[in-house]
Each structure stands twice: as C-alpha cells, then as structure tokens.
Length: 151
Image (cartoon, rainbow, N blue to C red; front, side, top):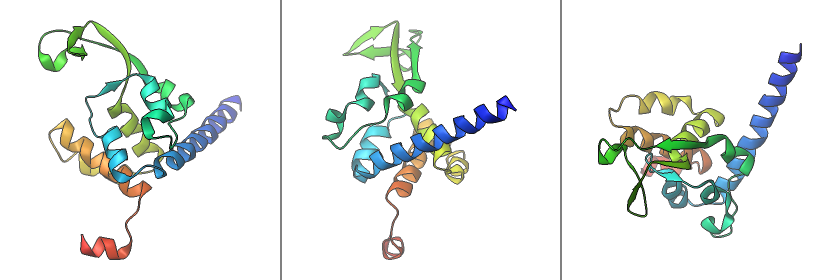
C-alpha cells in the first residue's frame, strides 16, 4: 500500500515538473530551445539551466528538475573525445549536467516515444539527438496544418 502511495506521489510530482518545464520552454523560441539542448556532448553547470539570465529573463528550468541530472563526469585522457575541457584545459572531472540526459527525460515526460524509435534508426549520437530535440521543439511549438503542408 505504501509503495503505491509513494509511486502516486512521484508520478504527480513528475507531472507538475513536466508542466513547469513545458511552460518555461514555451516562452523560448524554437531557435532558443535548439541552442540550449542541441549539443549532446555539452556539459554545463547546473546554474546554466536554472538562471533566467541565460534565457533573456524568460524563465529557467526548475532547480528541483535539474538537480536530478547533476553528475560527476570524468575524463580518461585516452583521446580528445573522452577528455573534458574547461576553458581549453583538460580536467580530471567536472560536476555538471549533460544535455543528452535532459533531452531523454523530456522525451519520456512529454510522451514522445515515437521520436525515440525514429532516433534509434541513426548510427551517430549527434544525429539521433537532433531528432529528439526536433521532436521536443515540435511538441512545444506545434505547427499549424498550413505550416505542415508547406514544409
């Protein structure tokens, strides 16, 4: 019984957060959303996502949402692809948030699983990530029938 109650509370909280994130993202243009989320390799400080200064005062991601994505990312120095750089200098580790994690979570929260299937058809992480970000943008800023026909 307690498990169901906790699960229900967690689901309710998840829906509230999804609504808050959607409200915030709807204030951003398609280009601003793309610029924020499009690079799957970016590691940003949590404050990047939670400061409205980074979004021209239009709002920000809730801290209670972003804190779930904070991880310590480690370099292994075997190549430039596996090494983390901060201001051009290699670092051993970095406490940061990955765009890729946020995008996958938004796909789940917004019920965009079809985009996940489409993205899985591509071999590169960058291309599949762009498919997911485009699906989020289309969900936040749906096209009118006329816009869909002219595309």
